[in-house]
Amino acid sequence: MPKKHHIGLSEQERAQLEGVLRKGSASALRQRHARILLLADTHGPGGGRDDAEIVHAVQTCRATVERVRRICVEHGLERALEPKDPDRNYLRKLDGKGEACLLALSCGAAPEGRARWTLRLLAERLVELEMVEEISYEAVRRTLKKMNSSPGKKSNG
Image (tube, rainbow, N blue to C red; front, side, top):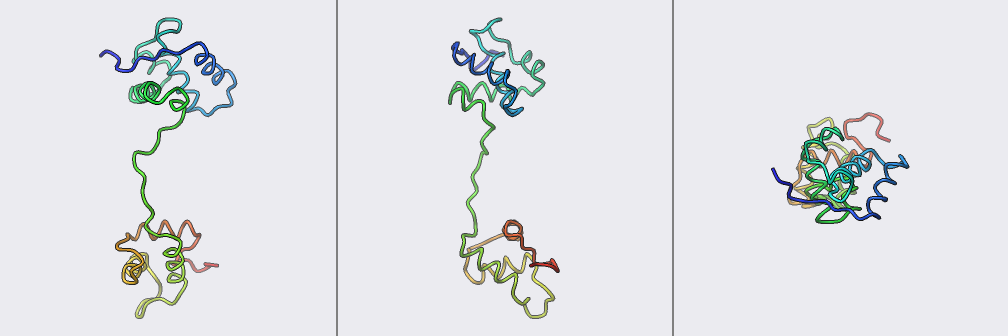
């Protein structure tokens, strides 16, 4: 299959990538991406290898080679050396006021008829108090974990 994104590095870019490999202080991911780009360079010695050869030489998968190639062409060399961005950004359900309310609830007395708070009870109470429209017990767990608070722990501070 013909390559969709062709890499043509300048002498300066090639020297930069070789420097990344020569120093050895860069992360393994950064070094792997530098190797991929050097092997894919059509202006370099050998005229650029095909993806199957690069996959074998760098010991990675074809998707990584294709992604690094695409990012280099679309966003530039420096961006191609960085880790992949997450595909989605998740908005936080609870702001500072909501977190404070959650912490106060979890440290307070348990609801009537219960020995202690559960994550589901905390989530339901936050909705009842109109702190959020909806929230999962998992979001409550992550928030409490981030605050080093766990409603089921005996030694909670």
